[in-house]
Length: 236
Image 1 (tube, one colour):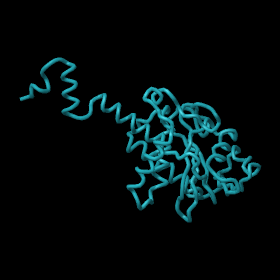
Image 2: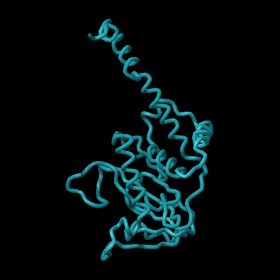
Image 3: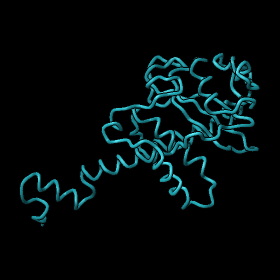
Image 4: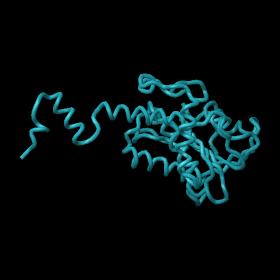
């Protein structure tokens, strides 16, 4: 027998009852979603230290298959700059950022924002990285051509980060991350990854709340409408 508490009354009352009986209703979901995005905006500490030492840098695309397009020529997918600091054979800290394209005009500002000058930048042979030495970086190039090793073996750290990022987006978020809010999901992944070895897990949320207090308040209307500015000054 179906309870009259669930099926009785007006449609508005049934929706409210179902919301309380089976889980959060639309209003509760909206509040939770808003708070999550407020916290994501606090996951980048103003003035945070840049990566240093030897850093692998590459790009990756996020999005579905795009028919008839290969390589760096896609227009519908989101292009992500990835920087992974070497820590022996492991990955140290990382930086992720959506960039407009794979040109030097987009890649170099991402690197300057993410990595200290004087560091060693390890990339593939893409021309967009050519100006690095003029910008005060030491540049190591590993070309994929003629190599027996796969790209993931030649530059293992960035490929590991990309694999974990895509698995996290598809697994944790079921792939339901719009390009509009992608930047802040990248910030969340970076925040989590860079603190994965923390022994004081309870302090992570405490630090996050501290950051949230120090940033500008972001109302719901701005969260659903605005998009994050990249280092190039463009809104993407």
